Length: 290
Image (spheres, rainbow, N blue to C red):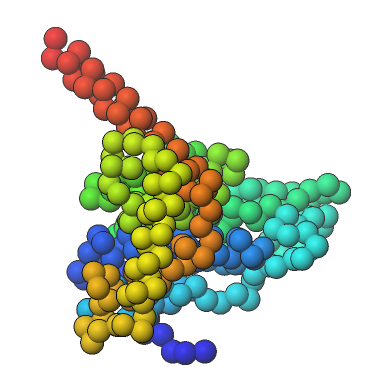
């Protein structure tokens, strides 16, 4: 195994980590979990100590998920493991164990459903990535417990974090896994946020299938024509960096048209909710001034 420069925890302690870099780190983390989930693997011990960072001059850091000592990859049961005895190990870090895992009790028909458990851990780590304390660590003031917290208890993120990403983190940290996006769709939301035409996100514009396919073709062309073989000494390839091309390439290997549409539907629902909330707040302000 190659040697990496640092881990995520140590990297985030350095001064001067800009918002663009933080967004790319979070997108890479979600892409890693989507990749594992697609192949029937659950890491079960995702934490900032187990996320390594590769640094190159003049480009964003490359994120690598490591330490699979607690992972499961069960060909028979997939990510839904029978939990017939408390002797069955639930995984690694208890503080970052998804509610549906830590609260599950053993029984004849009990199941440990890891389908969205790694994604939940990513939501908790998102607070660290965007410059705050992980709300589920015991050394944090007013720390939350994954066994008892409610969604409204989640602390607000820094106001500089884009609202769409804040909403995505809130969704990922839903106690009920049925209310969370799938890892694949969550990763798609971040990829669309980074690379799609702004009108698709901002104006609730619903692109046709042909428009989406043309966009994917454009991304694919850039990957093929400006890929790693054309990397320049300053770490750029055309308008993008090596790290960004890795992220896009990973997205293109798993992309499905219907799943892009589902991600866009969720984004448009978020925008509609944000508009309604803004109108409500405006109404409160007018009422208060009467």
